[in-house]
Length: 180
Image (cartoon, rainbow, N blue to C red; front, side, top):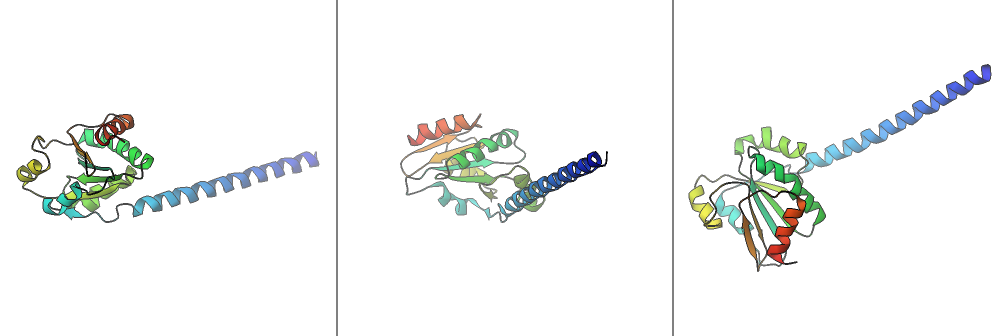
């Protein structure tokens, strides 16, 4: 009887030790992930169109994807995970997310949104009230609706005034545009 009681105590001790070890490792990983996410997009630059325009062109054959979006735009938010998945799968390509949100909401809304949604692509904010001028400079056919995406390199350029339905849709459009 005494042996059974001692054996049960040892099993319980080992079980509790195992639980504590698992808990410690899972907390350590969560803390690391939270720290990494908190450093992403720590600084979000605010540009006018004149400052952002050079980012819309390249002299290289590297693929660039520039996506104009906003937190208040449901289709934009829906496609962000596909753009993030593309960025992870194709680290050789450059992704730029151009937020159309309000500069005064960077700290209170935009940064928390990016962190909550695990957005790791570079984000800048476009704050230029003369949209009638700069929209036509980007693409005269653009109505100004978002999401709006430009896929380009030094030889090819395509504009998409729509949201991408999934990762495959985005990859297909990149391959169609750049002909990889």
